[in-house]
Amino acid sequence: MISVYIPKQYRMNNEEAVQIMKSNSFALLITVDEHRPLATHIPLEIREDEGKIYATGHIAYGNMQKKTLDNNSDVLLIFQGPHAYISSSWYQGEEVPTWDYLAVHAYGTARIITEDELTLALDTMLKHYESHRENGRTWDTFDPELLKREMKGIVGFEIEITSIQGAAKMSQNRNETDYKSIVVELEKSHEQEEVQVAQWMREQRKELFK
Image 1 (tube, rainbow, N blue to C red):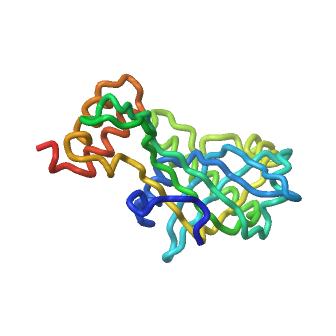
Image 2 (image 1 turned 30 degrees about the vertical axis):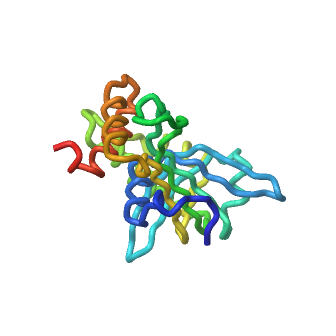
């Protein structure tokens, strides 16, 4: 299934794409309700289990997108990695500017999860984001009555990922001189994402920077 245009030289393999999903897990959840697209920006937990990939999350009970999440085989998740404007002033020859980016589109089948599954999912998410912090607020540190009340306001879901399409458009088409120039210029930036693009590019072609 090809649903997003990705030139061959920019296509990620599944392993690379899953790492982008895990590293950039605040995703865009997209479904369709009576031919109208619905979207929610949402944190997800990505896990691999016996060769399958799952995304687990929750939305507000009042979010009407919940109605599209049970037994829906046409769910799209969009994960955005670092991206940066690339000035053509960094090239040897005369060219137009462009934009470099990492992005993953993941398609799958969603289902609403049970209360017990939601409890486990929330416990896992809290451990992910809190366990390394001093006085981190993991599940067992909260008042059970507070958790019970808060859970009434959300709906948990799980998406089994059936197709992944990842794009790493990172100046692979540039010659060695231009490629090195792009990395050097981006590393001068005070913008975190631009520096992250440079780091990714440097890692991909280490031999150029020895």
